[in-house]
Length: 334
Ligand code: NAI
Ligand code: MG
Image 1 (cartoon, protein in one colour):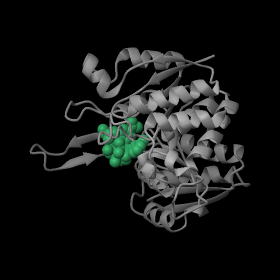
Image 2: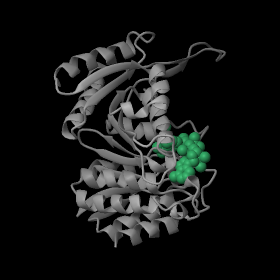
Image 3: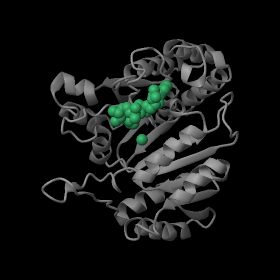
């Protein structure tokens, strides 16, 4: 039995978490859930969106399944997601996007895995007003060799382990010569150590165009924090939207699994949310803790249910509620 910290999260978080837990249970996942709070829920209950008690549970149990979190706007708190990634040095944010049966999109053969540097770049949190009347603002794009080696190395190791053919490094070294220039330089060096894997680098704006024109040419993609944030939502859009893409945040000691999407306040509490993204994240978690067979069973069931449009949630043009969709996945497992 693995102990995993469970943060249901805000907005649609509790609804999709309930559906996911029911499915994991039915699939026979051996997980002992340790519940914890963060985000708006924690802020309302304790005045702190990231309570020490939650950090202590993560330190102890090391694995987290997390619903989306709303950072209270105007509260003076930093993004809880960014804080969690930095606190536990979860430097790899792995975001797979794969074409799915029955999902109507212009592309049928997308199968890319995006590695986003997760702790620095323009999200390093180094920001300041550069003058007293607040008409000039500065945000620092911090890049270190160490963090670049970590994320690019993780992308190449993943490509090797999963028999992927190519790694594409995305940057803007023609303009951001020092910061993303360093990232590119480290990539060029690391690529030499993996002669069996094809390597290319692309400038981010060109990458955005090519992902929309011909996404099947990409395999493993590695990039800095801001570019990875934007391109991974773009990748979600290529395969049917934010309701369908899971992610893993992995460091040396800790790992946190979450959907790519946010708390979707526009549909929260209405039983409309699609739990598949969180479910795919839970499958990545099951693989991480060695319960691959349970993950595969759930994955097969998802493929069957997605192929039947009516059984899907409204974001995919279906008629099911969050709970009914979850029950259909459970039924498809037996
Ligand atoms: P969002 O991802 O919550 O929503 C964008 C759009 O996609 C909305 O129309 C929403 O209804 C739809 N959507 C998202 N997930 C869906 C699902 N599972 N099923 C069906 N439709 C879905 O992005 P938004 O509105 O920009 O952010 C809302 C809040 O979420 C903000 O407070 C933001 O900071 C937070 N957020 C948290 C993240 C996290 O916890 N990792 C990631 C992104 C945003
Ligand atoms: Mg994002």
